[in-house]
Length: 412
Image (cartoon, rainbow, N blue to C red; front, top):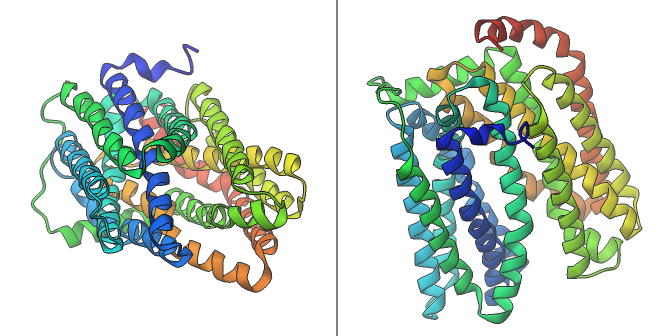
């Protein structure tokens, strides 16, 4: 346990971990309550998808600008502003629901606002991790612990939201989410950072965006990691979007079946986070990425053929484990090899690969499933994941040669 939790020895990260843990539970509560609210008001699956699109599309459009701003000035101050805006969005949503004034256009506007806030939050927060811990050897552990935090909250938040919606209503979930942001804001305000760590820039924003793209895609290890991440994200979207179809039409179940499937996926993801946290350093993560991608791909293929609930739940553990380990390991390597003055911009590209594919991937998965069926769509996604992992494996030795001088220079 001392090895798994070693990043918590750093005071700033310990504060962040506690505050973010409370806030993430509220975030997952709001996510479930938002979906239920839209469905209760409209009974329209089209509007469910539309709200999801509005909340996700800023990750593709706004994130490059967010990466530039993350590399300018004080990241801690930016995070405080970002979290305050997210809290304001939750309180406005709670007020509209609790007073009975909520309308669909309110939800669309507020979803787009939260999507913009999230687009700025992720690259800023990811690039801030190294400043919180100060020691590069604990970077991978800090990223893995953050992943475990996200997945632990994913198991707790929706369960609490389901109970609260049934007893009190959606407004209470939004209100509690707003209150939960006070925990992470308090943690950020209590941090003690070394002065003068960030250097303000005066160059043009568009020039810095181009510089970030040229740096990331001109260096083969970063380019390969981002490409594999984008492909795996697209494949993962297909099973997430189509899970209700598998629960209802393939496994002949209901909401409980859907809950079991997603719950077991969360167990696998949480297990993957704990495994990464137990690793001592970043060395060997390339092979881990290949293995995790293969586990995910084979899991998807097997799941597409499964017609039994117990087997499907077991396979969801492997699918959740594989995708979480692959994404978190890519994040760890990227943060280990990137230049500090371009960290925010590379993390913005990581966000685009991880989340920017979601709105279009969701639409494509739904369209393809309407043509060839949900099982065949997931089968195709699993085959694509296998092909991507095998291509990455073939290039692994060359990528390792490119990365080794950076590891040696940084004392890894």
